[in-house]
Image 1 (cartoon, rainbow, N blue to C red):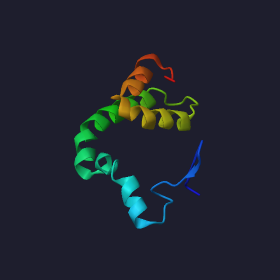
Image 2 (image 1 turned 180 degrees about the horizontal axis):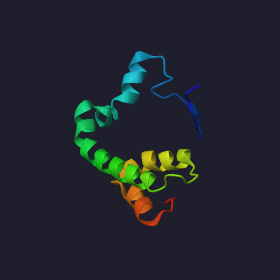
Image 3 (image 1 turned 90 degrees about the vertical axis):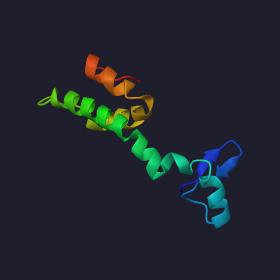
Image 4 (image 1 turned 60 degrees about the horizontal axis):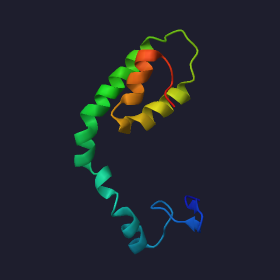
Length: 96
């Protein structure tokens, strides 16, 4: 159900593999990125992006918007040092 389709066939992910040792081997290279210390380190940047995002939405009160699209861009662009959200706030267009 959570496997990934690759050119070589279906590949298990950390969510689908049932073998504990295989799970550890898949998880080990990325575990640090999701550790509490890493998340705390990135929190100030996320707060800044969230503030820009909320200001942009406040400026569109009463307008019909596709909130799903805006949330998608907010989530994806969070790793790009808030560039996407800043562009949205400045131009009103969706950076894709």
